[in-house]
Amino acid sequence: MGGEWGQSAICPESAQEWTIQVGQHLLDMDLGAITKYSALHAKPNGLILQYGTAGFRTKAEHLDHVMFRMGLLAVLRSKQTKSTIGVMVTASHNPEEDNGVKLVDPLGEMLAPSWEEHATYLANAEEQDMQRVLIDISEKEAVNLQQDAFVVIGRDTRPSSEKLSQSVIDGVTVLGGQFHDYGLLTTPQLHYMVYCRNTGGRYGKATIEGYYQKLSKAFVELTKQASCSGDEYRSLKVDCANGIGALKLREMEHYFSQGLSVQLFNDGSKGKLNHLCGADFVKSHQKPPQGMEIKSNERCCSFDGDADRIVYYYHDADGHFHLIDGDKIATLISSFLKELLVEIGESLNIGVVQTAYANGSSTRYLEEVMKVPVYCTKTGVKHLHHKAQEFDIGVYFEANGHGTALFSTAVEMKIKQSAEQLEDKKRKAAKMLENIIDLFNQAAGDAISDMLVIEAILALKGLTVQQWDALYTDLPNRQLKVQVADRRVISTTNAERQAVTPPGLQEAINDLVKKYKLSRAFVRPSGTEDVVRVYAEADSQESADHLAHEVSLAVFQLAGGIGERPQPGF
Image (cartoon, rainbow, N blue to C red; front, side, top):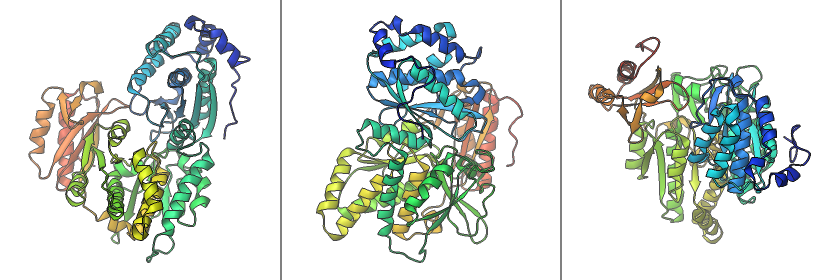
């Protein structure tokens, strides 16, 4: 853990004195110091980066200037919101040689869209324009430079992360901001810290122990209520993608060990981060990670590199691999929440938010069997999170395993009251719901939190992993990537389910889809690299594969594909 209020080597003698010198005059923002330190974190010539869905991500060696500048921006955002802002150094499920950075807004949410634009503007400014850009942002956003600023910083386990987070600290201190460096954290843990700090501890204690204790206490309370059926002692195999999840789960496991035993694989002791392991690998290759032996019907799960995604899987008696993705996780969670509400006698509006990647079968099951309304948004957590906030209880998961549940303040109060006032069965259900609310990380999708929620629900319902999987059968699907010269030639509408440009592409997709049963397909530009992502679904794997390949060819031809033409066969 980092020390208390940090002081960087470059901090002026007294940040306080310096802030007073700055006065109201933006021009006195000690531009000399900014210029001097900016030169130490110089921008490579001609490099242009975009603040995307997940912040900035690229090769680690190109990021030093971006980190310094995001430290500056975090201070301005903190002054403007009069709140603590988070800066997370991670590239999530990207390869180990990449890195990235994202800012966390006051309630633990993603950075506001207008500030994403400021981030891109500042990151790409030439050295001589830095001062003008900082002044410009401050004026546009009416930032009071007299206001104190406080920034919290976390980082993942990549070899480049420590040095890059030091560059963030340089940016924070040169603008007179104070900071707390949490050191190694999962991304959702940093979101949690920011949320705790800005709610005066109402949401929880902003320390790593506070996080462990809040979640574990809720989990242990819940699992105590499970009638032990068959599976007396519950155990789970966890693939940690050779990332930060392994460190944090190891620190945490003794807090909840009476309810669950976890066996960690790909714990970073020898393998490379995200290489042939992790949630992204398992989901896209539809096979278990390297380095994990699976017996039939054992429950297994994988985190991604920064532990904000989770998928489950198992081998059946015939040795076939079965993936349980974000759609099935959302289904398990929302069905359980709905059952508890019925038990308590509360008619709250509960909604499930998905993206175009959600399997058609999951949408049908939720709407037709569980009678839970489903909404579709654009890909990207911020869109799902935003939509989920519209409900009393909003559950959102991307198929890739990133998601959580949100509970309105009114609902939390109501459930707390019910847990105190109701009788017997109703009271028990209200108490369960109260603990489930504490078990979710409502600031962000969180693999550790989601894992504990899933384990608690399976125990309480007495479900095996196969019974969970059997809630509905996924339609076979295939995802592919097509390399293009410029991903911006593709634009979409209707929650990314239809292509608007280039002309003729959507018509081509429509014609291809007509050839197959129960089929649909869509394409969308990646948020992080020059590739177009293709998704296809049909009544058989063979049909889904054919459709995906044909759509890839159409993209290659109509959207400026580069390199080798997409080949059939997987």
